[in-house]
Image (cartoon, rainbow, N blue to C red; front, side, top):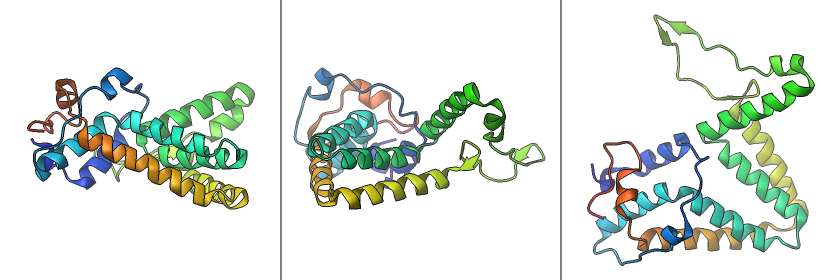
Length: 204
């Protein structure tokens, strides 16, 4: 299946469910070969393929740009980290890993409190879950932590007066990501080891 047939919604769902703990691609590969796509359809396929394959590199690139923008604003750096954390928690794999590590740390100091942080059991009807499996972090729905981290980060953005700076830095990081994903020619490894097996990025 060509990446041109993968919708933006499919790509977003895949990025939300994929494991983000994998290390970034080597810089020698990241900056290897650049070409101009021959058509808009090939550019569309290449963009989706690279966004998925180099996702960790792009995430670190944006964090690096934000870090440079806030070297003189400590509160803005904390706000950026909380914002990144609230976005990362939207990924199912990261949310599960984050919850497990927090629970393990709490268990070392208070086993009783850690027991209360277990997620509730999902009802099963006729051998199948009654509903789509909800994601819990430390026994609470994921949206609770997203709301808390987002609210605190917004307050810190306001206090540090760094909102305009983060918008410029974020725009620069996103532009750099878009340019790289548009002109980086996917190698064979990128074409064969991305997305579900049926959605290979050929003809890009």
